[in-house]
Image (cartoon, rainbow, N blue to C red; front, side):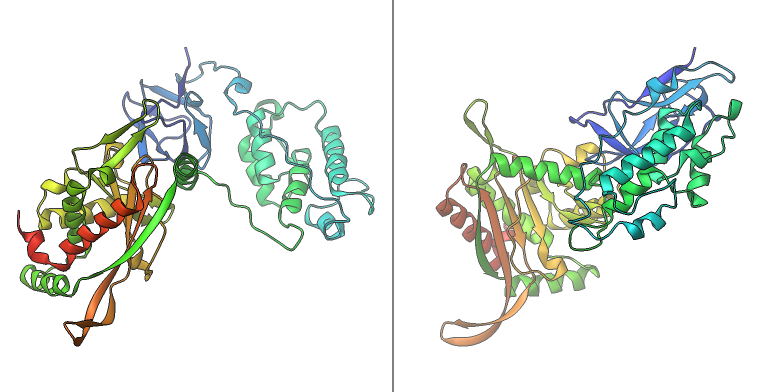
Length: 434
């Protein structure tokens, strides 16, 4: 009997994922535990293994589709075996698009007629909603008596293909997804979906591109929105004189013949300061009305990747040497950019550091990784003129921006924490003392 394999619950509260790559195709024979797809969740790219062996009878989604937990990924069985109803396997239809402005509010629709072809007689004076409805009626007349699967209709809607012009090559003349893709490439774009796409290409002021908010970017947006709604954020800014630390860094790099970044030093300084200020290494348990003062120091390092921002967590950072921190930070950054991190690598953080100086920035108001109490942004190291003991000197200065949840700690505590971070960065000998 054919088996519908649904997108499993991969843990960590993940509700959906985007299919990045299919590792199999319809007709392939697979083994149990063989990886069938790579799916990008809001945490990482995970490999999805098959729960049984058999033949792939149907892939229910294409690459780039978003699939929810519990939704059918594929159907496994034996060649020639009957499958469940395609209507049951197809994703739910997309919600109707909101009513666009009338022609009085937008540019004239006459050019749009040419964009999606001539479908019947379209009056020049018709408004865009009426234009779409008119095309729908014409297309439905063309489709009478033809069975079109929901998944095929959805693909046609996405590609803007006119199902009324598509020649079916499937069994009994049924239109397949490949038929729709072929028609779209051939320019058969006179469907109501094409009209909707033309409408969506511009707003009142001019043309726009609409990019779906999904994957890592959507997860980041949702997470930050949750944090802002639940917290009261304030940012405290200061500068650290890192001239002595810069000299130490150069000596260490020359000794190890390596490129030691500023980040390992900052992580060490932060860990030392967190031990003096436990409220900065805390989280608020709203349900029980308690502060969770964490006795472990797991430091998240924000990494800029093409899809957005990923924050791998260095576990037990306070127990690691400078060289080990440097190695783990570099490894985490490389894995983040290659989307090779395990879900566990992204969990358990108590405090986060983000380096805006890597892109030339000086100051920032970063948002903490909720429910963490605070986040520190380091800026670009600057050459500044300072007066020390009556002598004008050129010094290296590191900008620091601490955003914190004002419900958990107040401004004075935040300032004291930053002062201690500065003290460790300005006197490297303190960092070297265990």
